[in-house]
Image (cartoon, rainbow, N blue to C red; front, side, top):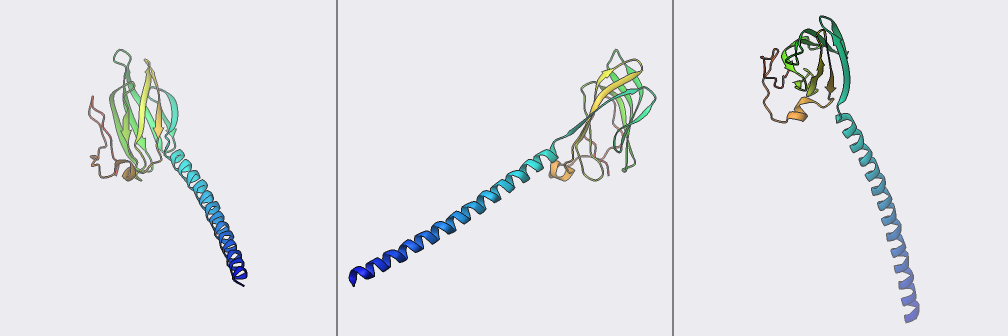
Length: 168
């Protein structure tokens, strides 16, 4: 009778241990699924924050939409100084960014009114009647990218110094 009680108690403990193992296994499986889902979310977020590069080559005095909502016109080039003059027209913002003596590999940074950016326009090659380069488009919203940073609103940029522009 003492042994029977001990056996009954041992059987009960075995059942409890088995139940705990099952519950722990289910919890662990659920955590593994959640971890895999979170890793996928992080990968998708990282991919959405990667800039998209759009290469362009443009003849002088021709306007070309180099990306959706971003048109570029080169009005002048200086092969000796490796500089470009022109403008960038942003839609739907209806804003013009003036390009004044922008040198090659010197980025012109700007944000769209909807907060996406910073985007970068970079010239890589200048000829007598043409210019080539690329546009980096970032899908990240400006408030996330600049968090508490005060960036002045600018439509035109002065010669020689190109800073970030916020379009509002």
